[in-house]
Image (cartoon, rainbow, N blue to C red; front, side, top):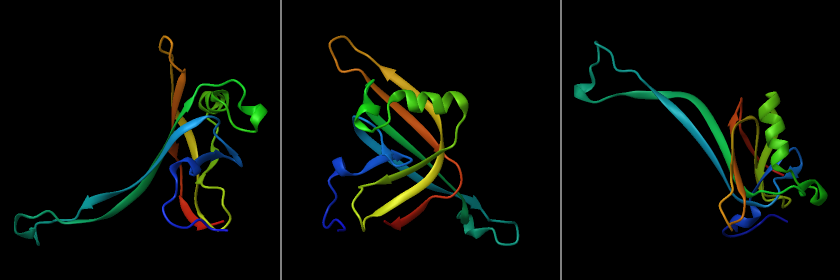
Length: 141
């Protein structure tokens, strides 16, 4: 059944294929559309810039607790993302709640950044950035 009301951020996750990122603490999907300037000498715009829509693009980032046992829990580990970055593999991804009827964002992306942080007596964490290649779709499950 589709979710109602405000979505709890805990429920909205990044999936690689059908598998969520293990021990994720946050994910961010950024979708942008560039503009292109269309002002010209025949219509100088009275000093105001004029724009038209340009290309669309997106990135998705995830922060998670560093773990080695994600596959035991049927989740993806940092190794999955490292291997994809290392080999240049295009990943099929979604950002979704997993609830039937809720909207999902679907896209393909390359892992373009992976950072591991390990401070003394703190949880080891990692973050990854995925650069979206091609179309992002949003549809109900």
